[in-house]
Amino acid sequence: MLNSLYGGQGWRVSTAIVAEKSIEVKLVIEQRYKFLCPHCSKRLIKNSRRETYAQALPIEGRQVTLHAEVYCGACPSFGRFSSLRPPSFHPTMHFTRSFMQTVSAEFVYAPAESLGYKYGIDASTVRRIDREVLRQSQPEPTKDNLESIVVDEKYLGPTCGFVTLVVNARSGEPLYMAPGKDRTALDGFFKSLSAQQRQSIHCIGIDRGNASLASALPNIPDIRICYDPYHLIANMNAVVDKMRRAAIKGASYADLQLLRNSRYLLLKSPENLDASGEGKLSWRAIASSTPLTLSKKSYVRSFGNVMNASPRGR
Image (cartoon, rainbow, N blue to C red):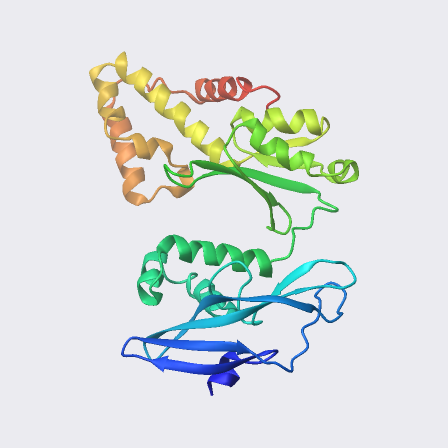
């Protein structure tokens, strides 16, 4: 049973020690197996042996550790040395491939701390395993025939800070990620593109920050700038708040009855107001003896000033 699980392709199980909470399995090299060079498929000349270990999936709640001999040989054609280990072992991490794939699959639904407690590893190791599995399983992003891209920043906490993300606007495929949120973070993406790939990009979606704009225009001068609707609405709401505060400072008592405790009512669109909201606004308007100073014309003028404050706003 253990040979079918862990042996094969030059290794066999020699001994297994089963304890109350752990299982130790020893893998040795088969003498008759021919080890071939991974580069030219010629037989390797044996040089030395050493031992390594890897953690496998638990069996009936017992942690399984595999100890295997590593075959070190020299290629007669290239003169290179190669270290061969059981195919189930990861070459750089002390885990089996099945263990890493299982942890990465469960990481979608469970936090790293819970998985670390379940498998007896650190939470940081869980994240490192998931990153390695994704690196090997996910293909490289396609940067050919790009028509439009979307750029945004994501805050990952005080340790990692901000990262800049670039996504294919049509397919949603992640294309690039770099630490920071200044223009140098986005410059790396444009430098990774060829001249033909840059020419195919016609549109970029960004927020109201100037960092993405300062990076996109020098690299693609004719690119069309599209601002994120979420941030545009946020700017409009900020204008309403600013005008409301300015009106309250110099308002009369009657105007205060209309403006007080009505911030979210003023921010809502008419089609989003329910019956109670409409009734509240109507009552406040009737109770006010003087007209409201927040006219539509002044609102549009104030929002236009905010839009024109950014260079090349479209």
